[in-house]
Length: 110
Image (cartoon, rainbow, N blue to C red):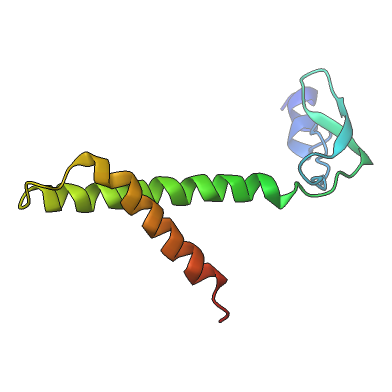
């Protein structure tokens, strides 16, 4: 066994791994990399507060709206197969009523 293979087998040339604590999303950090691009150190400069709920509530509102439109389109499509007076102009008013019902369900104390 050569001297180089003996030192590799004993672990003398292996890199040590560092346990990193991940910062929260939005935090400013300073990262030090080695020559191969691996993280050697991570310093948290400042923590940002968690993102405001207004952004996610806007997304939730859009998801509810799209679901209500999808349900309304499905129902109107089924009704249109048997009733001539039903048309696509009825989709959005029905979606609005579904959203009103959803809003009332959420506002009710449990």
